[in-house]
Structures are given as C-alpha cells and as structure tokens.
Length: 505
Image (cartoon, rainbow, N blue to C red):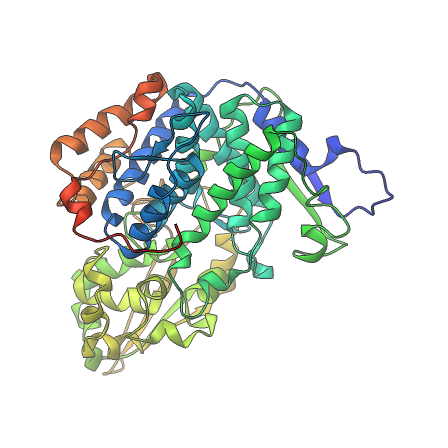
C-alpha cells in the first residue's frame, strides 16, 4: 500500500490535480489489476448476504415505499433498465439502485467495516448491479467494480473519521460507488475523477439520521448515496465537472466539515498493479442489529445459558458494559439519547440501543430480526425493568483495542459486569462476534447460504432461493443475461399483500 496525504490547500497554492485524493482514487479505479480468487469468493458471499436481507425486508414499509418510487420510473432509452428489488419489473438504473439500497439496508443486517469511521460496504452492491443490468454488462465487470468500491470505501474509513464531526458515514459511500462504477464501465481517470467529486459533494449530510429518535431515513441514507453516485457518473460521462479540490479546497470538506485547515489525513491506497483486497478486512452480521452489538448478543446468549439469574430484573442490581468510546457514545448510554431506554421507540432506535439488545438477549437467549423488535417485546415489564439497569461506560483499554491497527488484535466487544441483588457479581467479556473471522464460528460460504435460506423462508419459494444462490455463486462467469437475472423475485401475491403507497410520481 502507499499513502495519500490529504490536507487543505489555499486556492492560490497550485495543488496539482494528480495530487488530489479524488484523482488518486480515480487512478485506483482505472488500474486493471486482476481479482484474486479469495477476493472473488468474498464478493459472491456478500452478494448472497445482500440478497438474504433484501428478502427479509421486502414487506417493510420503507422498502415498499422505495419500491413504489422506483416502479414509477421505468427505463428510458439507452438501456434495458434494472430489476426492482423483489420483482421481475425494471426501472431506470438510479431508481432501481434506490429500491435495492433501501432493501439491503433496512434491517441493519449486512456487512460492516469499523476503523476511524463506520461503514457498511455492502451498500455499494445495489447501485453497481443496477447499472450492470441496465447496460448489459457481464459478471466479470460487475466483480471488478465491486472490488474497487469496497477498496475505496474501506481505505477512506481507515483514515478519515466523519463521526467525530457528526457527518454521516455515507459520505464515504458515494465516492466508493462512483469509483466502483468507473472500474466496471472502464471509464478513464478524468471522468471517474469528476464523478467521485460530485458523489462526495452531494452525499455529505449530518449524522442526525442516526441520533435520538431514529427514523426510517436510516435505511434511505445509503440508498440515496448510491443513487446520487449513479447520477454523478452519468453527468461526468456527459462531460460535466465537479467542485474541486473537493476534499482539500479552502472551502472543501476537510476545511469546514472535518478537522479543519490544519488537518492532515493519511489515506492508504493500493500501489499501481497491487491487487485490491480490502473486502477481506470486512465482516458480516449474524444478528440484525448495529455491528457493535453483535459480540454482545453472543455474550448475552452465553450468559443466558450459564447465568440464567441475569434475566430476572428482581435478582439484578446493575449491569455495566465496559466498552469502547464508539460503542458507548453511539449505541450506549453515553449517547445521551433517552430514546435508547424508551419501550415505544422505533425499531431503528432499538437496533442502536445496546442496553435494550443485551436485556432481550439475556432473557431470550437468542436474537431474531423481527420478534426481538416487536412492540410487545420491547414493552414487556420485566424487560423494561432489566433494560433500565444496564448502562455503558467507556474503557480506554477497549477503545484502544477498537482502533488497534493490527486486525488480529482489533476488538469490537466489551466486558459485562453485573451486580446481583444479593451482592454477588458476574463478569464476562467477549472481543469479537462469533461470526467474525476471528470469532467462535466464522462465517464462510455455507453460513451465507444458510442466512439466505433462513431469511427467505416464508418470503421466497425454495426454488427461487436455490435459483438465485446458484446464479450468485457463478457471478464471475455470468454473461449479461445472467447478470440481468441477478435478483431475488418474490411471488406477486406476496408483494400485492402490502399496497404501494401513493406520492408525487
């Protein structure tokens, strides 16, 4: 890897375009390096993973609304359009990307990468698939584009913290999708450079979408970034230009939205000819909850078996989770959000409340993407009583482990310390989730396929699940027809059971 230094430059300082981060990312996108076999295998895994969570979300209100919007925008000249998630119908590619992105993100149940900032790199896949279907590209092109999108997003997340400045993490997603599209379409460096700048400029928003009473926009934010990136690429291909230097300018992102005029960021990027392997540093979810709760669900499941007394609020005086700064302030009591202890809170809020998640997992010994969030489950009196006895504190040791540059030492867990009513104590800890590559049961192809089959049960016919699974596992060899069929299709009667809401279109 090489390092790209990013800092603010005065307009009269003569920063060369070749030294701008957007240009360097475009160079990475244009590098025709071969895809390693293990990287290709992981791309297939993540395509399967996205399909699994899409199937489980098809009847949820945000996904239904996004589907309605997409179906109102049929394909126009210049391509065949792209599949609208869950259907056989097609839409203009940016709107198909929108519907697919919402379906993938709605349940907070796909892959993650955590470093200086947060990300869900699987959000890059729907817009890439949509454009590939629209233009009749083959699986090899889609594969290369996906590898680039993951590389760019992960490299940005390694170096540039958005959260500290309350900027939503999708500001790294838009440029990643634009770069991935540049690779997939074989665009020249100059065109991809313009698209990356526009994608960043149009997808930088505040983090209020993940704060307080979290709304349905949480699922829409990444889909909006993907859609905006598709549109940015379209404009760039038509010769239109973008604000520049978008990161380094006096009035750019670093100067006014991030660490300011004196900031210096060191972004790691592949050397020319070096394989893009960042996807191998990412990890998926076994449970439908914010990633930093994954390990704690596994710990709570274990304690449910070994210490069933922790499930009874009458026998518990307090439970403290000693954890990292990010876990404490994003999904813990350090957020200052009273909604994280509110039984009437939205599902989106509850999946960002580790006190709630630990309380339910301690009592149930499991986690379910629907049952664990049901209003009646959240309002159960014994759950509420236990929930309000659970707090988080930042522990510098766990913060250091969270940011450890060595992936073999990096940890996203916590130490649970419980004081029982009789004065006795229970303590246990976990470093990474069971499904993490260093966890007790790392996910591999069989687990991804199992996840698809479990989440598609009752939604897709078995034959449809196996059709898609077989197609996805042959992604690198697919022709254009195969790519156009790369989407799960639910029965018409199932989709019709939830009416499409009306709007402007």
